[in-house]
Image (tube, rainbow, N blue to C red):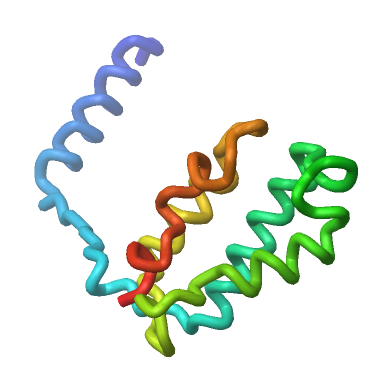
Length: 125
């Protein structure tokens, strides 16, 4: 048998195998993602935010934070501390969007412009 006939035979077998199987679709909704403990969420945001500040070389001098530790202390005090959060759990899907926004934001913009998806009222259940 030549190569073209073998390739054609394999294509027919694969096509019929794919056509005969019933496709299954998997969907995940936000309700299926369990909420996250507030302390762990704050830790994740502090690491992401202060890591971003460090990567953007925004420590020391005229910048808001003198070093990583001062960033971590301040951001920890400010994060999920508003009345919207209280002792509530954090929406894990929204936390993921917040962390993605931090990781993908550029340097030089003010925090309020960078991390709008990280507001207390958006993250707390």
